[in-house]
Amino acid sequence: MATSLISCSPLVDPKIEKPDEMVTTGVLVCLRNFLRKCVVAVLSCGPMPKHVAIIMDGNRRYAKFRSVQARTGHRVGFSALMASLLYCYEMGVKYITVYAFSIDNFKRDPSEVQSLMELMEEKINELLENRNVINKVNCKINFWGNLDLLCEPVRLAAQKLMESTAGNTGLVFSVCMPYNSTFEIVNAVNEVCAERREMLQKEHAGNCNGHAANSGVHSEISVADLDRHMYSAGCPDPDIVIRTSGETRLSNFLLWQTTFSHLQNPDPLWPEFSFRHLVWAILQYQRVYPYLEQNRKLAKKQL
Image (cartoon, rainbow, N blue to C red; front, top):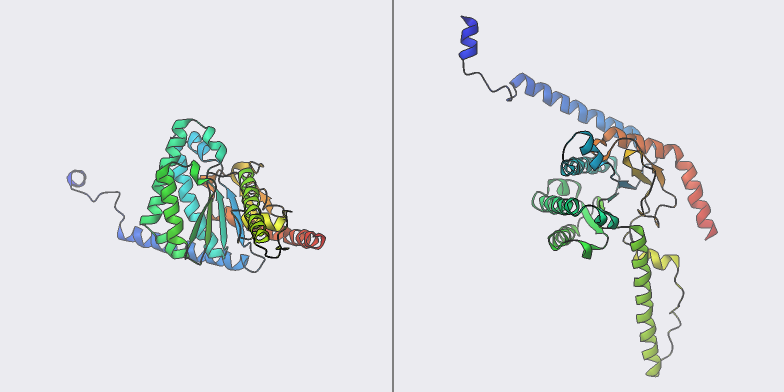
């Protein structure tokens, strides 16, 4: 009879958490947050990176291994990115730069490229509409690359997001898309050359008008000149470059800026990258920090 009553009674939906389960979940969340703060406090006793750069590799393989669409892999990868931003903020990392889309990625299947563009537009608009993460870390967002290659809706959304966060003074989050280092260096050279041409033309015009020549104009291009025209101008060079999925290639990413960066290639695919992987990356950086600093100081003496 009892069994009959149980089977026929309108029971509570099993998906709805019971009060005791909600309490248990809340306690576990609080415990997890407390432990994370303890780990961050211990890490902070050593040298902490100011700038972490990430090549987010493995979204498509993540999707393939789980027999889901590539778009799903990219969505999970975006969630991993938002989580990593918050972890870096908690750790006191000031600059985060990610390789989101290479210029070479336009060579992929057109349907995949279109899907990625739609996903980028969707996520950028989400950040514009729901600013919880941006406000929490007072985040300034940059987009580095040839934005003219993007379809108009994505380009306009990216420009709007940059403009809306330009005054923020917290975490500096730079998204490289569509980007490669070769284009960045060539673009910097072109801008310096254009700057010099303009200065020389002004000097020539001054000479024609009887004014003294401007001896401050030089035809040579220096490293400092190029640094001023890189997308990364104003940002320190990356302390750590992480490429997930175990790959050891830089794939034309920040070649100018990574001379003294610590390169790491953890095995997890990008959607699997978590707090513990970030902690391990910083521990590895702290282990080699004296060697990196020695090389930096030696290079400065040789300049």
